[in-house]
Image (tube, rainbow, N blue to C red; front, side, top):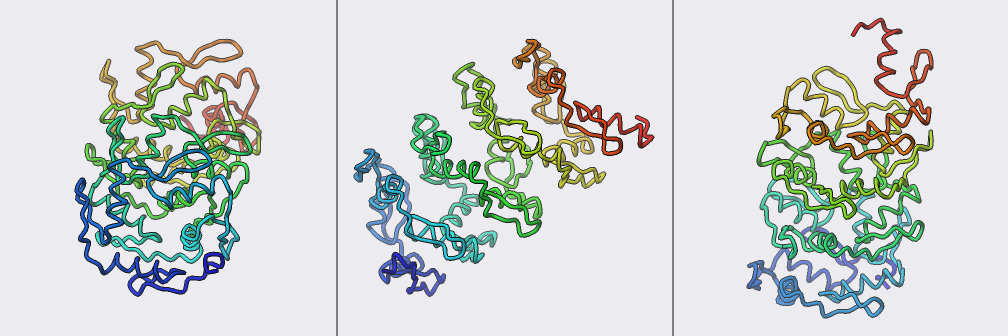
Length: 429
């Protein structure tokens, strides 16, 4: 009955983790007390139990003895197959007692509960950062160790976790087994599908404790929190630039390596990031699923829609520490700061002109190539930048989104509004 009630009677004396079964608690305790005498002969990882070593070996052998009887997908572990089966059955017997969210397994429900309790029992022994889940602590530890034992067999990219390696593999296979039941968009990952669904439901269960801003995803809330803490633990080994997250650091590294593994299948243009390739694809598809609730303007991405909304709200949360100028976007503030530092890390390979921003360098390069990939659908005029095309389109649509707060006169471009404001302020350029 404890499976259904969620009762957790048996507690680990070392870390206070609770279990509904005595056997589960006892096995867990071995992680703290027992010698790890069983070694993987391939990668030297050690285990406290022979069975765990044998299960781990399947990572190297590729053995997947457990098959889903519905879709024939195979798994290396029985419990992974059983978890997968819930995709087909939809069964969610475990409920969060605080917010009534339901889960297909006890473990995810218990981990979810820590959102409400704030409990973080697992500590990194190097930097003292605390985590609500043991596996998150272990993943974090790889920042310090640099261990990446899992390799993509197609492109040799290495990963610290088996799961991210497997998810990465879907870039090469194109497999998208998870479908949104509202708009039928398909996803390679279940969690990506679940995140996408919140677009339709509008659910935002995660709140910033500093400024009360709410988020649909825990990781978005955590990323936002760095605005308040300023923590940047990830460093580029080439130029020493620091980042608040590993992902942006890794993407930044591609500036130095020039690696562009993602290709548009329509025009063969290559990209350093999968999401940039996907955004580019919308030039060809015209898909714009995100709408501004104020002026009904549509966007292909949620981020640009949210940034656009600040035109209407006037919110400018990011401040330059040198001159106190405020910005609605973090990246605009960061670009502005280079005015003060004079940093210009991006060079045109044709004429050696240097730029503070990668996108400015890329736009400049089109002067040499003559490339104008963005076309006005009304008059066929072509542009080097999509932003210029969008600004030009306002000639045809008559859209004037920028309003003078003094006299209510409206403008099609922000710069025009700024110049007009000098009439009221008396400022001389």
